[in-house]
Length: 183
Image 1 (cartoon, rainbow, N blue to C red):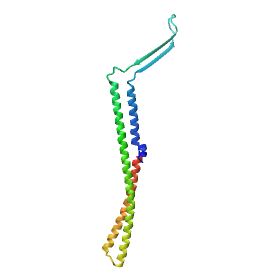
Image 2 (image 1 turned 180 degrees about the vertical axis):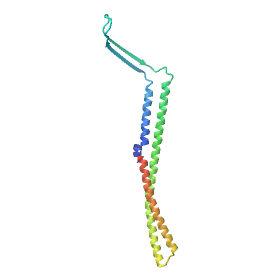
Image 3 (image 1 turned 30 degrees about the vertical axis):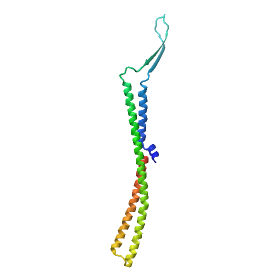
Image 4 (image 1 turned 90 degrees about the vertical axis):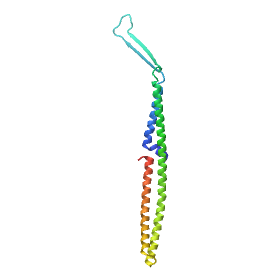
């Protein structure tokens, strides 16, 4: 469930894409330190010219840029990009830990709610049995109306507890589904 949540939840996907973007931006800022080489060439024909000169011309040029005197702008930009990448990485790690914790907690709550279903069912069965016994004793005149009323109350409380356990289990399953899929 944790691995499913880490691959499906939209907030972790968005943060993962943000982290990848920050990494690429950091690489681009680092590449500003590298020298740039630009080349350009041109060729053509001159319709109006001096007859001594040729009518064709060719030219080529190369420009090499070395980032030396920029007031440490590129190093500051690279440092900022590196720190942004580290911050995004930490946010991603925090979110992964939070999602893992939430999924584990939800699974444990769902598991506990499932076990409470069985306990509530057994309690209801015992309350029904106790009510039957007290009702029989009451009909035989061996117990009082107070004892019979208490058995009815306990049976009603057990029915309410059983219904509440079913509701809690369904709620825990819904929370677990939300924690794993984000939906």
